[in-house]
Length: 143
Image (cartoon, rainbow, N blue to C red; front, side):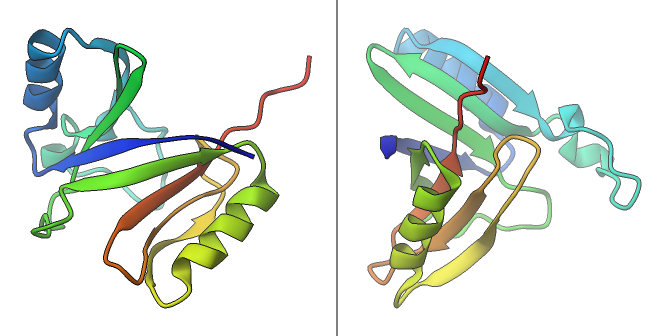
């Protein structure tokens, strides 16, 4: 089941400034903000100093709407036209795989659908119309 879709804005090092701006300008509530420096350490891949304060992921709530924000990683230029992407969240890995497969038909995979530390299945794909989708899976933990 698809849980929802929302805009995902990408910045080139000004993500923290953008979060503060939208928080004040749009009366947004910052539900979550994580920098690349906050990520769990990986001994095989160290985070460069210039990346540590960049926003890896921020979630703002504006009324009933979710707005997501992140920065590019240093060395990855921001592509013109890709500043706003669409994030789509599903409730199962199976639905994410199905959706990702359909979106990649005639398109191009940016990051293959895979397990990450924040999602059991996450990936990005640009569809045949040039729209980039970030597919994420949220599975509620059973109690």
